[in-house]
Length: 201
Length: 149
Image 1 (cartoon, each protein chain N blue to C red):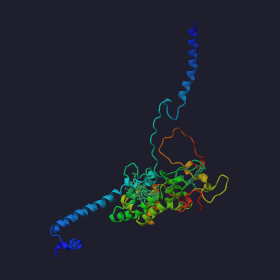
Image 2 (cartoon, rainbow over the protein chains, first blue to last red):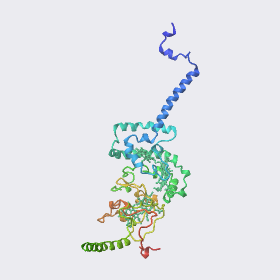
Image 3 (cartoon, each protein chain N blue to C red):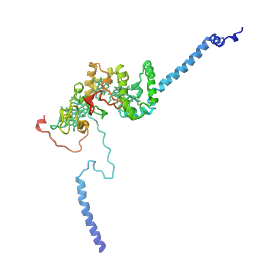
Image 4 (cartoon, rainbow over the protein chains, first blue to last red):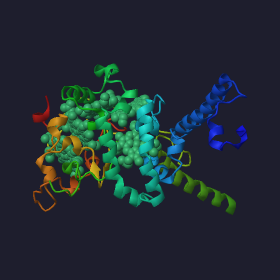
């Protein structure tokens, strides 16, 4: 019986006689690079502001609101974009967040927040998710730009100075006090009834 | 002859109309400055907000106190009033802020409410921030002796 009569499986398993080990490794390496760069490229392309606002849900709501805030335009012109606040810089949490975005894709297809009104109805829920995330990671994304150790309280405004010292003493994190810095807040009746008109205390 | 009379009348009429007007124009200064009515106003200077400071002295009893800090970007809508996140009775202690006074809980019929009265919800109707702007007109108001230092 000749080799030819063997099944395709055996052929696949048989070591190559034509290519050297180095050659095979090379092909594998190049192939891997192409795949990886595709993945990283994808990771990179979806980590930009233009990607975030390519869907109207983001562009018409949170983006329009953010355009009026100091993180969009300020005297120094340093801008914080959507991924700066919403996406970790480190690789593992970044990929984890992207995997969790499957939920967002499903709701995009279902049109859960397709209109301004629907967006408003779901804002509390969405905001609470962001707050919980930031509370859990000690406002990591804020701190990637605002290093608390590099903050000179003496140069800050009166109220900021007093509150930042209190925050340090009580182990608070940025998002405990700085809610709604980039977007309009949801209906806050449940969060702080003393700060909403008509709410029962 | 007729022509001369006509000219005379026109002159007199002209004087009557023009004279008082130019005198008035010299006296009255528009807040826009002495700019021709047709001409576009000068663009206003950009005023700087005064940095956060201690509470500003009040000039009369029941004056709504001036806001001694910046408030840009503070939300004030049906869902939330950022001012109250520091000034409400529930929050003032932690924020180190002055609490809103009891007058803010009274509606127009004199009923004491459990929460802020709706007519007091929009704080900046009465409380205003301060900039380094030069006053447009001189003000000679003096506080009553009790409020002077």
